[in-house]
Image (tube, rainbow, N blue to C red; front, top):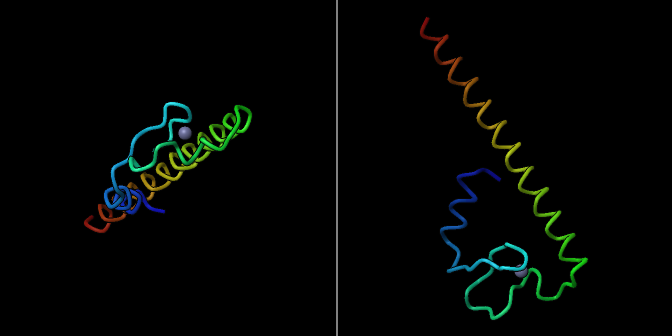
Length: 81
Ligand SMILES: [Zn+2]
């Protein structure tokens, strides 16, 4: 998923609040976090670990995206020479 797409999806979503327990966002209309309210502490740790891994994947993907943009920029520059 591209950064622009995920931003667009976030903008479309209803108001969200951040869960103090798992740090994920959930709809304000819910009383309890739908990510962790069903989980015990051990499962919560696992969820957080997974979430961290996802964040790291995203930042790696962002670097590739940036690298791609730099390469395209260089190619454009070269085409003018
Ligand atoms: Zn939660």
